[in-house]
Length: 233
Ligand code: URA
Image (cartoon, rainbow, N blue to C red):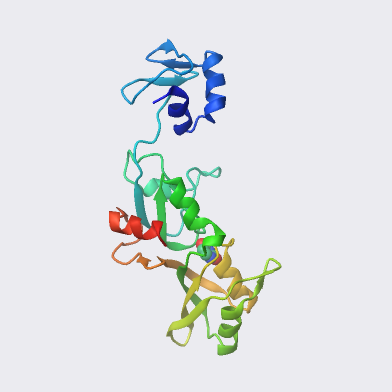
């Protein structure tokens, strides 16, 4: 492929900006100064200001059961563990799709497919995400009804969602919540809005894709069928 496309696909900059870098002599191919418009392939060693660059060769898709105590970022300024630490070594240049809080567990997709990541996170696509929230004490039917029809968090009403009790005992209630938005700490804030504290939160599903079968901290690759399903969700 053309060198500017190779560099752009490697995430260096736009094709036009890459041409500029080439003109400025900042790009080398197999140790020699690159020329605008030249062709390169994956057997070539391409470097920008001495740093080797390579486009993503194929899309990869991981499904992780994120444990508590990990941040959903590629790197953390505070030096905390990130979900990347749980991936197989030599994993491609992938990143998490959307975010789960430090204290939230459960289903996380990690990929290098930017289109899928955008599709799953763009609010207009209203992708359903299901969580199990454990709440201290009991939750009144009235409060469940409020959660279903929408509560105000950060000054904006949440969209209609489905909420049902899955388990109850003397001390706590487990509630399944399916939301089609992805606002910051949304489920925790929704319960706060009706006066309840979430003591445990786990994402169990995105659409019908479920975390079942994966233990905490485990990762597997998605099947082609699952990838197809997500792309068409
Ligand atoms: N809602 C939350 O409160 N936290 C998450 O991590 C995800 C959804």
